[in-house]
Image (cartoon, rainbow, N blue to C red; front, top):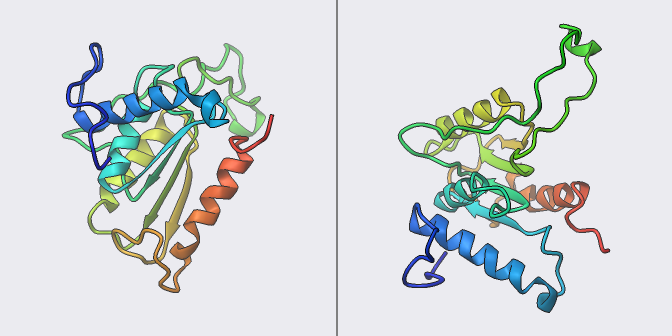
Length: 186
């Protein structure tokens, strides 16, 4: 965020100021959703680079405070180590076949993270390895993030058009939020 929502954090809102700002902005938007003509349960957070860190940390907030979806564009929640993730699915019931192709669809766990869209250029030396580790941790916990890896674009490809496949990430993101049901009219 370019500016602080408030100069002091609201009581009970701890952590990094940028993340606290994002959560406070989300709370304010949800509180005024009717005024804005938007659904309060279809509000996401998208961040680029360090903003991807903020959006990723927002995704890990307490249930009810976190965004309904997140977009991490060449960013991830970084730190000394990756954050602990809640399980995506409930454990398989006793007697479930060991062979993955014979198992029923998993049962989503309460408290699971919201859907996540991630995009990165494979030649991004700034976040490449950390991004890979974050994606692996998500998959290990049972999540299936929508991940797009572009051949080139480096760090900071943003929305400028350079003739590469990364030029189309915004359309892919729009298709994804539509497919996830976040753009439907009620």
